[in-house]
Amino acid sequence: MLEAIAVAWLLLFFGDFFSTFLYHIPEHVFGRLHLQTHHSWKKNFRHYAILTFNFQVLLDGILGALPYLLLAVFLWTFSPVGVICGLLFGQFHVWWRHISVLGWETPKFLKMLCQVLYITTPERHWLHHQKTNVGYGDIFTFFEQPAKIWMRSLRLLRLNLRSSLTLIQ
Image 1 (cartoon, helix red, strand yellow):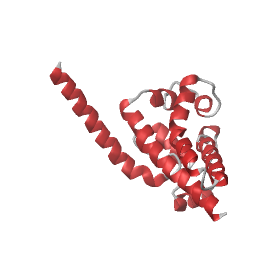
Image 2 (cartoon, rainbow, N blue to C red):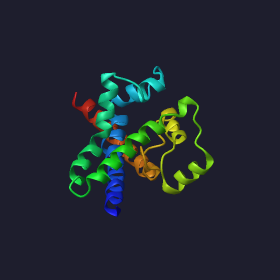
Image 3 (tube, rainbow, N blue to C red):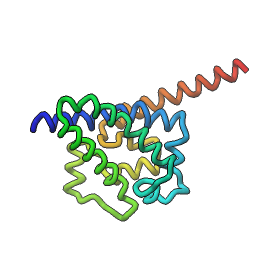
Image 4 (cartoon, rainbow, N blue to C red):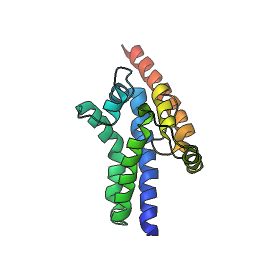
């Protein structure tokens, strides 16, 4: 039982870490797919966040989930039950954090519990949709500050790359 809990937590923690730092933030800085499919003001939030068969939206979701899935393969040998529970909790959290548009307001006791456990609430995730420079960490909020530092570093890198390319031309 404890092994399954540990594996589920490791899957969620490291999946969120790798998804945030290797996909989500680089996509915000260098890419377009995530911004067009997940942050576009033209989209009906309910449609593209929860109920869609749009290829680009599904691709963005798969790329964001890829770190979790790769970790699941590795962690499977330690606890298949932990992997399944971790993936199910992760998917449940994806659905839950996107329900703000439906008028959901997280109850105060649950907000406090999420704050103590550093878990992203729907309100916090909605803040990320409104201001794409804040609210990082799909599941855990403690990735926020390191994510901001990583984003600034990548933006500086992008500027340096652009200026280097301009000098070459």
